[in-house]
Length: 155
Image (cartoon, rainbow, N blue to C red; front, side):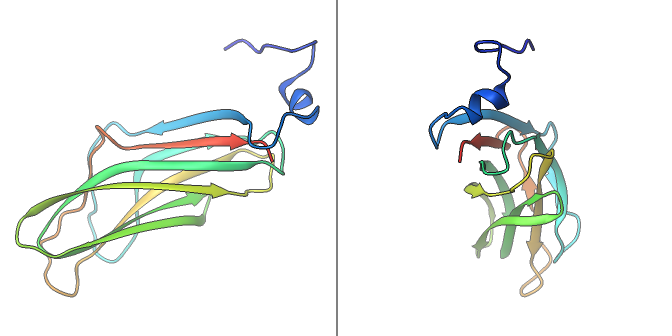
C-alpha cells in the first residue's frame, strides 16, 4: 500500500497538525477462518481471532468492535473477552437455560485508552461455565460472522 503524503508530511505530522478530536485515523480488522469449540470448562481459551494496530499518538483512543455468535446446549454461561496484549479490556457474557441447542449473537463495543505508540495485539478469548448444572454445553464461535475491528480515534 502506497503512503500518501500531504504537503510532503507523514501521517503522524498531519495528525499532530490538528486533526479534530474524534477523527478516525486508521482501521484494522481481524478475522478467523474456522469454527472454534471451547474444550474445557471454567477457563478462557484463545479462539484464533486477533488484530494488530500501532497507534500514531499515545493520546489517541482505540475503538474496539467485536461481533460473532455461539451455540450451546442446555444450561450454559458463556463469555468472551478482548485482551490488549495480556490485559483484559472488556468482557461480555450471556446465560442460557433450556433443553435444546440455542444460538447467541454477541456484539461488544469498547473505547480503549492504551497510551502507547507501540504495536498492540488485541485478541479474543472464549469461556464456558457449565459446572452448576451439567456438562452438555458446547460453545462454538461461528467464523462466518465473527470479526474484531480496531479503529484509532484522534484524542
